[in-house]
Length: 340
Ligand code: KG4
Ligand code: ZN
Image (cartoon, rainbow, N blue to C red; front, side, top):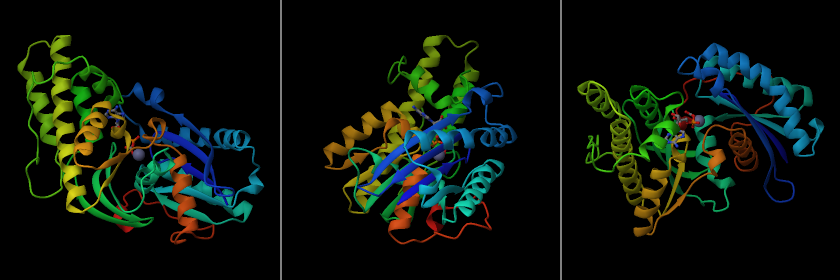
């Protein structure tokens, strides 16, 4: 089976070809990031995002076919991101995928973007096996899920306000860093002195598996306001204090979720999963407890088409739940993963 995957939920157009013909293999994937275009505005401009997806899909499709040495006619199914995400951006990928599948007379598989993220470590050289706990940390979501199999997702806890990536982005903005703030803040934090700025650890000791990050951002805002002009070292110390706080909360709650589920594997997916300190602290704490932590390859941490092609191929092979004939479609800008 040859599955084409299309991702267009936000500011990245991703297309990939996944084959399960002779052993499972990601044949090719291509990505166009709109970051440079949105940078000027300090964040994603939805209308510009939609228009740019339109410009990118056909060239990217041609590229993955050429790189994967396959023709359009060899595609057996088309998977695409149905939600959650920006409505206009989702519409581009959905309309393109449905039209292409109809022309090729093959089925489509509408995929939940978060499902793509949490299955993406299956593409790595050290894949997890079901069941596992997944920590999803992206720009829009922070969730802990129990994953029993493809399409079997139980929500254990989630953020009550800002997502982890959102907190990184907003804090970066407060410190005068550009968009997207996460990687820039993480880089600044590397130059900060550990323990100099102590910030709150929201919900660290709460009995549930929920998160709350908006207070952390406010604590940074107060620090910034307190000082007349922040020097580079002070900014780096604040970035370091922020990262320490968010990482401690994520590590503590993720490992508690694994213990409460009686499991031994943790998957970390979504853009914040690229954070070096999060990976270091998590690996250290997990190894002490005999828990293995699985990440997607660094290039597949943020949005991409490969994870959508993979999720489509797995759905096609296992339950076939969600596989449908091409034609009428809806997009789901809000779509809880537990309903997928
Ligand atoms: O999963 P993703 O690409 O898109 C969404 O589905 O939201 O995640 C993007 C988020 C952004 O908030 C970005 O700032 C954050 O991931 N991010 C990071 C790092 N790289 C990306 N946050 C912290 N450290 C990083 N190295
Ligand atoms: Zn994402």
